[in-house]
Image 1: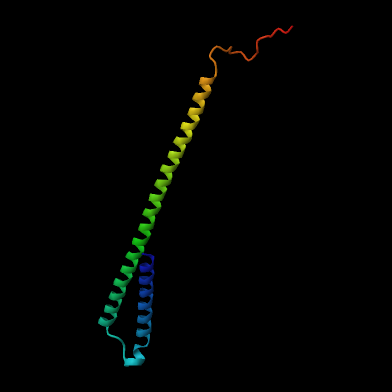
Image 2: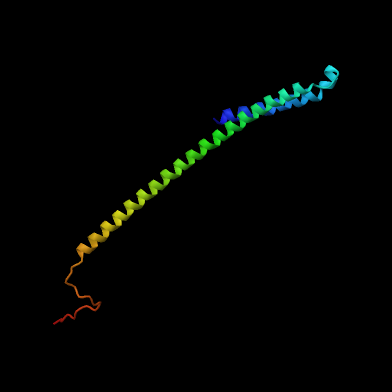
Length: 117
């Protein structure tokens, strides 16, 4: 699509460049000024070519934007999946720690006294 867009832009520039040279040299080559119908038809063809170029450029940028949106959506889904997996692993580790701790321990932080002989 990028090549098509570039080709149409080149054709539009070439068309208007040839038209400029043609109308600037018209007086010398044919001895008079160009008729209004000829100039109008030339510019109408140029307008159509320009609109085709504009449409191709719009289609190209639109397709790129849709690809970007799709990629961003996939990235968000992957981030959410990784977050869920990490959260599941952490929750599993916390459950294991809770199971390993005995429930009959004293809640105070001071250790009970031991008698040595």
